[in-house]
Length: 350
Image (cartoon, one colour):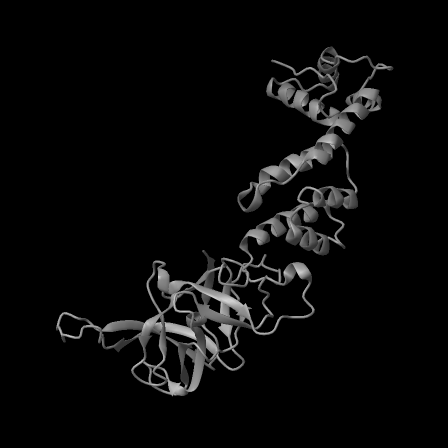
């Protein structure tokens, strides 16, 4: 049995647990035997002779070398920086940070919070969100959980503008909200909206812009999409924006209970996102994020797709070739009915 030496480079509690574990493995259970093994493997001089494991622990912690060890751990904490960015291993980072806090015997939640805040100083979103979410928290475990949550949010939050593209997947059919340079043959005769391929392509990408910037938003939130924001959805490829026409019938179902949804350059519908009941329970933040399940609403309508197709004649071949097939699209509509599974969409980032 190989017993590690105690040379004041490890926390006394951890060292004694390690020795006790090895003794148990080798069926050494009497405290006096474990104590004797410990004393034989200590490389520092204690001022008193311990007669119990408890006295040994107290003696090791009272020795000046323990303060040196704790100060060394605090120095390491001061130097720790979260440098993983969006792809960092947060679990490993926090495990190391927690271990150093334990070794340095830092048990004050305010100190833990303050030290964690300094690990990612250059990231404005993290700094503000972590400060806000932990301001009243007194549980160290909860502070660590919120650190992880904010780091995850910083990589998933959807932002405004054409440089931040998203795809919107219809969960029931697995098809992506799409548009292309083809117009409806009925109704508004404007650019079609449909649920397209199950694999991403150029027709699937959209970006968000804000109707009216919220004056109450904090500076670091201004380019982030909040659930309460009122937004426009613009098709990246054609630069046309989604609009609903309450005066045009849906192309496949053909009645006014379902409104036509189209893209148009000069007309816009204002949307906001609503979390579905199936959204992860941990998603308590106000930001729209990648992998969120949502309903997409206007003031009066909800965006829906279903396994119903409509056809538009392909007129691109001027020779009238019989080989030219019509376009077949899965319908997307606006409706005022109770929301259901056909109304659920999944947000994805490019």
